Length: 536
Image (cartoon, rainbow, N blue to C red; front, side, top):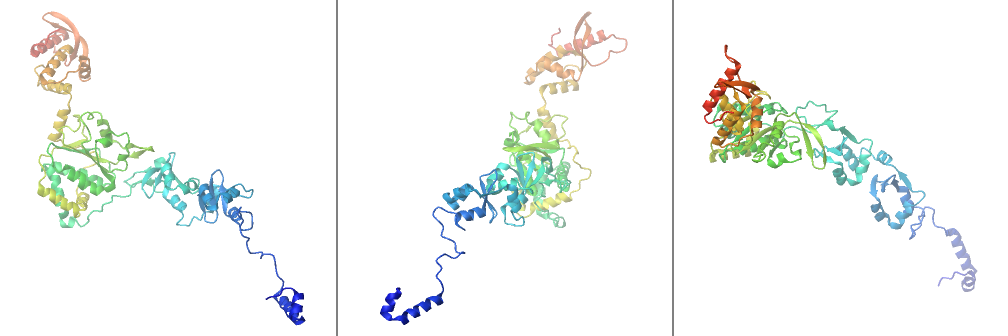
């Protein structure tokens, strides 16, 4: 049993035992009842301000971002939401830190300045490199996604870093007009962002050496669609080749292949072969896109195929849109939830249809080369084309188009006339145009010379009844014709009686004959040949 009282030890073991114990205590040194200065005290349950306690550490490490409810971690260079900090520190410590008089406060500028810009794995640095604000819109350009996105979408993608990026002094921006689609590669790369990155398909440079053997069936398919007409085939090949030899060229013309023959191969060639060449810069479109209020489907297109784009009720309503797509140099792009922008129009279009009149064409409209394929595609040729599609055929055909001689073909070259085009023009003519054309050509019973406007209208009504047309009103018809013929109120004499009426005057009276008598003779002849047309 150990004895700690020296009197008891002296009585039990003697003075020598006491002496030995005292000497051992002196050699051991004094006993320090205070804890070492470097040893941290155990944290209190309340998160007290003991040195290196949770609250003290929080005061050293975290700073509230001015004007925000977010917290900046000065050690990890990360921004946290208050809810996350409360979960990490505990509600008591967090509230004590938030309300402490020595709590640090910082700003976004200071936060961004303290982030190491060279850290490749820092999400903020990746944002600064990837996203470019487009002024003065609510959009950004995403370099990786290669598209315009909204600020709201960016915030949803990277919520923790968004505010830091938005206020960062090194955030990139471009004016709206500096985001360009320029396949011609003429824009200044230091001042603009070009959304065109090149045609994705590489041409087969060896194709010419082997006689383009890997696209023989593809070329035969196009010849089949042109009904074996070498002149039409040559024009179509030049039309296809020019925008590939001069990337970004906007042609003033379009192709229209229509036929009531099912399975002629129109979609196989224009919708499969050619879109494979253009890749992401090509699209096959329908009526829905053309009638939509949003036009983002037009953005960054070099080649478009339109299949049956107009319903019978919309054929006339959408012709203005189609004409602008063919000849317009710019186009307005509207996308849902995104600010609209103006973009250069580099799109060349092909229209496919099984209707005899896909849309109306005016006699003077020279925008379309019209072809009517007459035969169904043979099974053998269809299979041959499919094999070439899977074995480098599009790349070989691409090379063929790059090598094809253009001669004097240019973006303004007018299409050759075809019987198919004449048929659509004829089908599209309103009845008053047909009437006037036939009247002027001498194909009607009435002579094409001076007459009263009423006589012309009465004969026109009878002609409409016989041909199954719905007549215009007299005012509309005469107004239309008066833009082509001289209309005036004149006096004329028939059967010795002088009359006065509105007339179309088409010629001068012969020498020695008065105008009144001349016009009277014209009216009499017109009424006689018109048969049952009644005089005034």
